[in-house]
Amino acid sequence: MISIPAHTLNDGTALPALGLGTWPMDDAEAEQAVRGALETGYRLVDSAVNYRNETGVGLGITRSGVPREEIVVTTKLPGRHHGYEETLASFEESRRRLGLDYVDLYLIHWPLPRVDRYADSWRAMIKLREDGLVRSIGVSNFTAGHIERLEKETGVLPSVNQIELHPLFPQEELRRFHAAKGIVVESWSPLGRGSGLLADPAVTAVARAHGVTPAQAVLRWHTQLGAVPIPKSSDPERQRANLDVFGFELDGAELAAIGGGARRRLGGDPEVHEEF
Ligand SMILES: NC(=O)c1ccc[n+]([C@@H]2O[C@H](COP(=O)([O-])OP(=O)(O)OC[C@H]3O[C@@H](n4cnc5c(N)ncnc54)[C@H](OP(=O)(O)O)[C@@H]3O)[C@@H](O)[C@H]2O)c1
Image 1 (spheres, rainbow, N blue to C red):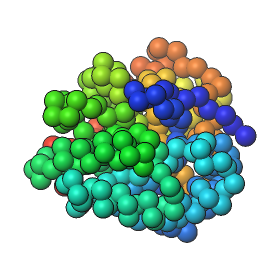
Image 2 (image 1 turned 45 degrees about the horizontal axis):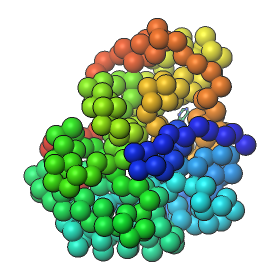
Image 3 (image 1 turned 135 degrees about the vertical axis):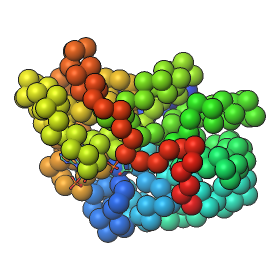
Image 4 (image 1 turned 30 degrees about the vertical axis):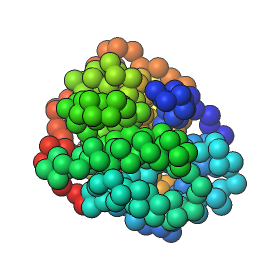
C-alpha cells in the first residue's frame, strides 16, 4: 500500500497531500472506485451534493474496512441551499446519504456572488464545526475577495479552497494569497481533464526524464507547489499510479516547463458562474 504525506490545516487537522475525485461517478461506480482507492492507500475522497454520489461514496467507505478515522471525507454545499438554515438542513441530508456520524471537510461549492448568501452559509458551517459534526470547513471556487469578506464578517478563515488548478491555469496570484493566509489549495481538474495536457510535449519530456507517466509528472507538479490534487479515476491501475508520485522530485526548471503553458480556464469563472 502506498502511504502519502499530509498537510496540517489552519485548524490543526491533517489533510492528505493527494485525494480521489469522484465526479462524474454515479453511486455504483463511486462505491467501487472509493473502496478500491482506499485499499490502494488513498485517504482523501472528494464528493458533493451535486455529484449525486454521496450514497455510493459512503458505501465505499464503510465497506472498505479502512478505519473511519483514517479517511478524510469531503462533500460540498450546492448553490440552491445557500443561507444559514438551508445550509444546516442540506448538511444533515449529506450526512444521512453518506451514512457517517461526521464529515471531515465541508465546502461551499461555488460562491454565487450574485445570490449573495455565501456569508450566511459560512456562519452555518462555523456552527457545524463547533457542534463537532464537521472537522474542517472550507470553500471552493472562491476568489481572494470572497475569502476576505468571510474573514471580515466572521473572523474565521477557510481551511481549504478547492479551485481549478492545473498547468494550463496555474493561478499564481491566488496561490500566493492562500499561502499568506495559511489556506491550503486543493486542485480540481488537476490533470486538465479533456484538454490534451497529458500529451503536451513539455509534460511528456519531464515524464520521460523521470521514467514516470505524464499524469504522474503533472500530479507531482501540484504537490511540489503545495497544492492537493484530487484526480478522478475509476480505473484501479490509474488510481494506483496517480497516488504514486512522492518518490521523485522535479527541479525548478521542470516545474517551470510544466507550468509554463497557456493560461487557460477549463471551468466556470467564480464571479459569474451559477450552479445550483
Ligand atoms: N469544486 C469544483 O467546482 C469542481 C469542479 C470540477 C471537478 N471537481 C473535483 O475534482 C475532481 C477531478 O477533476 P476532473 O474529474 O474534472 O478532472 P481530472 O481529474 O483532471 O481528469 C479526470 C479524467 O482523467 C482521466 N484520468 C485519470 N487518471 C489518468 C491517468 N493517469 N492517465 C490518463 N487519464 C487519466 C480520467 O479517466 P478514468 O476515470 O477513465 O481514469 C478522467 O477522464 C473531480 O472528480 C471532482 O471531485 C471539483
